[in-house]
Amino acid sequence: MSSKRNAVIIILVCNAILISLLELIIPVPIPIPGVKLGLGNIITIIAIIFLDLKAVLMMVLLRCIVVAVLSKGIMMMAFSLSGGILSALIMWLVYKKLHNIFSIKGISIVGAIVHNTAQVIVASLILGQMIILYYLPILLVSSVVTGLITGSISDLTVREISKRGIFSNSI
Amino acid sequence: MNIRMLKKGDLILIVCIAILAGLVLAWNTFLSASGSDHLTAVITQDGKVIKSINLNAVKNPEYVYINKGIKQVIVAEKGRIRFTESDCPDKICVKTGWLTKIGHKAVCMPSKTVITIVGDSKQIDSISY
Image (tube, chains in turn yellow, brown):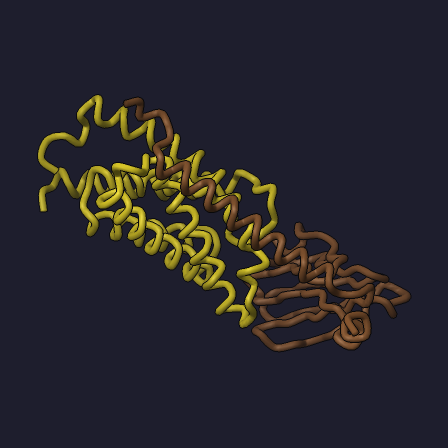
């Protein structure tokens, strides 16, 4: 493991944590458990494109633990972890196997859908009540909107990083 | 090719999601419309029913106090119910506002409390036959 690779991972994790914490200040107009912009996803997408799966999963894990401890409490970690890890895995698969037909925006939408759906399933299990069908329509629509927003930002960031060749040599 | 544009897969995905969301929404609307005027609010915590209130019979505002780690106040009035106070961090339950129709839900994840409005099953049967 090169030290440059470690440094890059640490910098990305710090960014992801900061962005996720800043996001808590932004009020969400829809009062539904789990609906949020998911700006931390931008960093996950950057990691998927420039790093390997192991680094991506490690970053998501670190981000979820730190953000949960600092903001919502340990109990809420079940949500961010289930959604975060699952959506990172699916986005990684879509990027590796289907990047011909999906752009970064599409990958981000897929990630948002997986993230939100996983969270509501975990919520249903914790509450002991099936709330998934009730929340599914609004979650799907909000996933497309938030996925497009974070996907567009990721797209711009990824192109800027490639253009400047920041991650180009030997990570 | 311009990478700012959406690709084919993106568009297909968005259309599929829109259709799926529309179908589930229609199904949910159908379910809540098939009920009656009879409204019963069921409050559950940890999956167990802690109180059931007939919203048609409420005259004076009725308060339910929940104090299991997180303090919460639920108020029921004629035909409607809501969370009014909660110590939870995100306050999603309070922001949900009044529940007035069959199928409506308010959820508080931190305290694992759910309010659901259900119809009266006898009432539904008498209408459908």
